[in-house]
Image 1: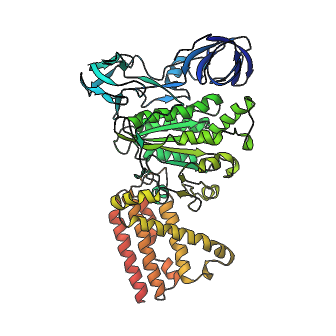
Image 2: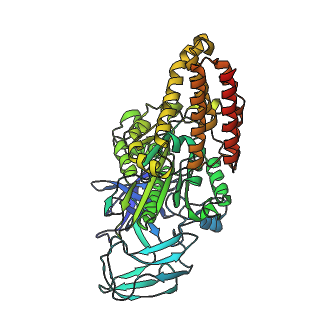
Image 3: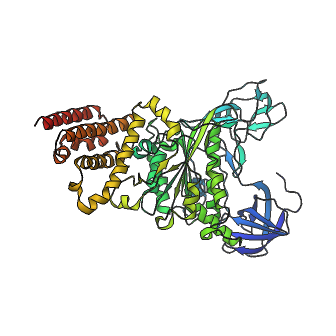
Amino acid sequence: MEVKGKTKGVLKRISGPVVTAINFDAHMYDVVRVGNEQLMGEVIKIDGESVIIQVYEATDGIRPGEPVENTGLSLAVELGPGLLTSIYDGIQRPLEVLVEKMGSFIERGVTAPGLDHNKKWEFEPLVKTGDVVKPGSVIGQVQETNIVTKIMIPPNVDGGVVSEIKSGSFTVDDTICVLDSGAEIQMMHRWAVRVPRPVTEKKNPDIPLITGQRILDGLFPIAKGGTAAIPGPFGSGKTVTQQALAKWSDAEIVVYIGCGERGNEMTEVLTEFPELEDPKTGKPLMERTILIANTSNMPVAAREASVYTGITIAEYFRDMGYDVSLMADSTSRWAEAMREISSRLEEMPGEEGYPAYLAARLSEFYERAGRVETLNGDSGSITVIGAVSPPGGDFSEPVTQNTLRIVKCFWALDAKLSQRRHFPAINWLNSYSLYLDTLSQWFDENVSPEWNPLRTWAMAVLQKEDELQEIVQLVGSDALPDEEQVTIEVARMLREIFLQQNAFDPVDTYCSMDKQFDMMKAIRTYADLAYAAQKVGVAPAQIISIKAKNDMPQIKFTKDYKADLEKILKDMETEFVELREA
């Protein structure tokens, strides 16, 4: 894109990260260089002769009269080999490169390309001279890590007949393919972050994203291509839950955006992820991960951009036919950045000072999720899971409420559960999933025809327990009818054995669907035997004192659990027989 007219202007006004320039031509969302230090910024408003710019770096020390230069380009990311294993800031500057240049503290005005333009990659062509290609067509591949990066015709390049294609070792800037139109194709292309990449069509989200977390897979599953929100107050476990999802979900690519999070939490992610082992391949988890780190002390404008940077990278891998899982931690910090920019623009504030377009921006972001047919006919997906940090845990605040209108999975974290050391601290009474109906067939075919009825039964027991708790707190559980005393015990087992999960235990951190089914079925077996015994006159105290069920929690921490579980169930049946015969 070329800017016609005057490309250089001068600074007129500075208000934190928002500056005003005059005497030059610009379009909305043009990237500009601000001041003598050439700070990177983006045009966000044009008011007559005044051009309002949000600057992605601290504006300390710059003053009116300094030059502003328009690059004529939109804020875009570089897409190609080298993205995997990378750690970027909010505007795709590789942090490792910046550290090499400057050490621990990043200076202003420093730029670095998103990809390594000097490294050579082995390119293997998948088309030949004379083949017809179209936008999105895969023309070759690069074995980057254990993941193959597919090289595609960019969506904004017209197709045609391949007149030349090479194999060999190339940098991302080298021409690897020439079309009869004269278009030269490199392994890398740029894409504007605020523009969704095109697809052929969106598909029905009817395949679950298996997370290995029992409360999510068991009670509130999310589909591949779905959207979920994890709201919760400080210390309730949002970040740990998102990190567990990033580690264990069956997505092929993970994009993790630390958007405005505390530095120590982001440091934990940056140091822990490279050490983690991928359970599917045995190789480092980082080989299929891209991290975007934008901590709370970084400029707010870059925080606002980091979410778009992450979703654009996710769309690139989706277009290759991969299932991508995107974690945004947290969208509240992103909304706060929008609120600060909006107030500096002197826009009319909406609810609680957030801009009036908050809901629209959230919708635009989450709508870029989905399971799709790509331009080349492959099937890919982006599952977006956003953490929300409502002040004081107040779910009625605008970011949480607007997010709830958009997403189809709501995993509500509860401070009271975390205080009782029940983790994940997801409240099973406040949470929900709107994917249950579309996913039921998959669970029938791939887990068991009993799975859906079991899940319905478990939720009914947990809801019944909640109804009985008021009576229990007033007069004690002994005052309940015998059947309801048994229900209280069954609900306790569901909570402590099935719903509680230790993210730091090497075995319990991930639970397969088969194991989840076996655990829930074992609890149902105890319930059926208990209700049957109660009906023939066995006292609830005797039913609750069954010894075999006390060994059931150990199943969570046992890798080869089937023999142990079988013995527990056999011993349990024997004890119930003895009770009924006594």
